[in-house]
Image 1: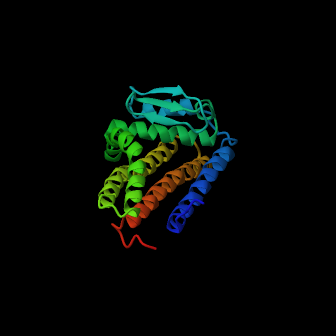
Image 2: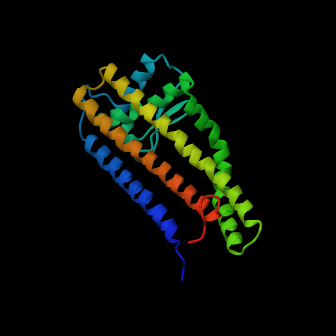
Image 3: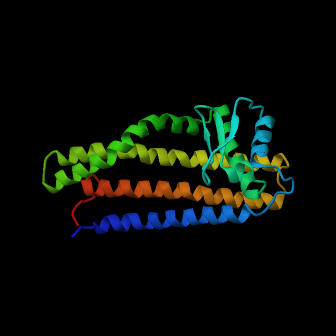
Length: 237
């Protein structure tokens, strides 16, 4: 029989439910507003190009990428990649998502501090993310065996895992700021009217919830290991 730690269930189930809700919310909201065409009928690619032009950003490429809601901005190559529904879409949802990704390009051009911090964390995260959980598991086993090395190993795992938590937390202002820039750009540029702007805001708010859910999940996992290591409270039941 496998033993499931009640503390782990208590800390992991709420963020798991939040993550499921966030995924449902972003999918359903995008689907709803992808069926609402904007008055101007511009494609997501056209909108992205228009915003970049008005901001005098001329070194960012716009290209399609396969996948659903796979839209992203790559700061290393200065490339804006839009999913088929957004790249060619003429909907309120496409307008919001395309403008959001341009928001990241504007952040990059302006040297937005949190975007810089997140980019600097990526190479570190690529290493620590592979090492954190194995180190934590080994530490927990050693603690259960009452090894003197158990807590130092757990501490090392917690430090490694904390990089992931920091990345998730830094991501929040990056995403919120990009959405704020996006809504301002499509409003001020006359790309959408006031009613369409409300729909775009709902799409971006739903997308933001997925990042909140990821941050909460990481924080709760970190809290669990802090408690079980004895570094926070008492690890005994």
